[in-house]
Image (cartoon, rainbow, N blue to C red; front, top):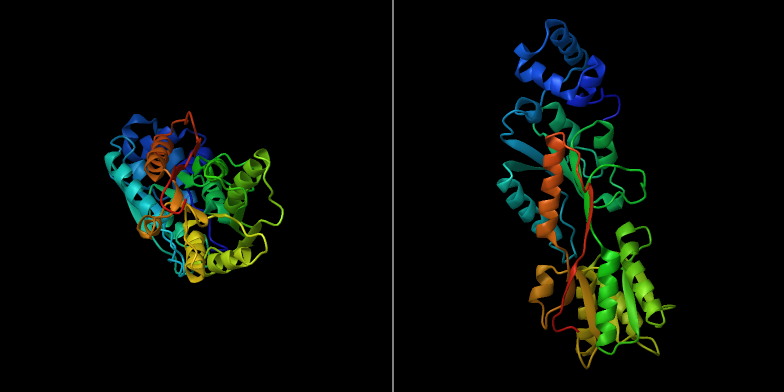
Length: 341
């Protein structure tokens, strides 16, 4: 994408012409409302910048048939998470009630986090975007913000404290802290953390909940954590490592359901019962796997239905040029207790 001319937007045309975005919209939809000199100035800016009006501009008065783009990433082998499936269903349902429609797209180059966005904007196929995976350093949010394209992120702008774009996220720190309380209330004192590498912002946020609450409850943390990838195999190997120790943990608090599934495999291989009387296991996401595995995995459920509502609320504000009262939303996960605790 290097060397391409920046995507012209309603905002950049308005700035170049020295008018408001509403004036640019009037030039496109109701030119009879403008003075001839103003209309000529706007049209010149449109021509110079190569602006191609999208649906938001064409339908500013009617608010009809808006398309919201969301890039879909390839499924990862060896994982148990169905988080994106649940989020997509919630987003599509909520968009439908708001007269919006979701357009899914993929990238030709999956290693380029910006691939696909520019093409949709140049073809005027979408009015706005929903961006996910911001915690992995996805630059799509900053790119869209720089080009003044309406979007909302599912995930905080980790590492970018000055970012001002709207986003919705889940409080992993608070959720994991609640899981620690649950395990302590069940009599556990040696609670190990099975997490992701420290390069994962979201993983460190969840680990922070374990570390803070364990410290508050006067329980040991040193030597009771392992880090690795989000795969079932890593969870299995990590659980075996922890259970081989002279003083083994009585509970495994895992950063995801995928990792927790691996821990359950390790327990099964050792003939150890998960849950009361055995080793407690807690995951994060409340995936379908968590609900179906025997005896049922205790897990922190992300409030994806409410996330969809908040994302669409913020999208509507952006498309209708309103200032959002709450542009940054953090929601709490719910601990769903099942047989593994």
